[in-house]
Amino acid sequence: LRVRAPIAGGRPIGSYLLGLAFAFGWTPCIGPVLGAILTVSATSPSASSGVALLSVYSLGLAIPFLLTALFADGMTARLRRLRGAGRALQIVAGVTMIAMGLAMMSGQLSTIAFWLLETFPFLAKIG
Image (cartoon, rainbow, N blue to C red; front, side, top):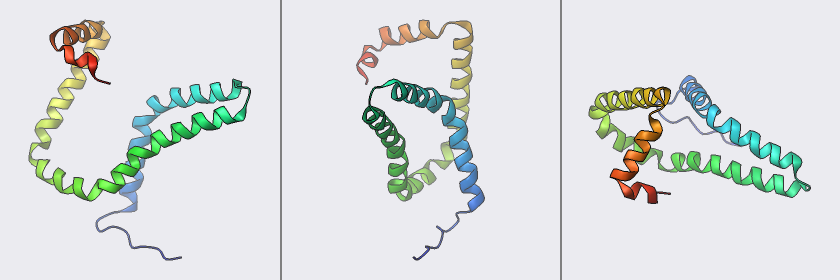
């Protein structure tokens, strides 16, 4: 069994911190879905339906990571070109998040959603 050398520039602590960031960010989204799947699996009459649900769930989690691994080199080069716009993108994303939070707290999020659908009807066909 041969162990490959790590990718140049990669550090174990960076990988650990990236894993923590993913776990922290995905836990609120993944927890309720996994809980629902486990509940359905526990109450189903056969184990095969639970295995099928968990298999599809696991595949859904794995695909983004596999695609990221496959296209990481190409994306790194493209992201380097966008580095100059990084600060502006962070500011726009931050302002958008704050606005969405305020809209949620004030109860205006559904009003904004309806306005978007009326103004841009093609958004209703996404998905």
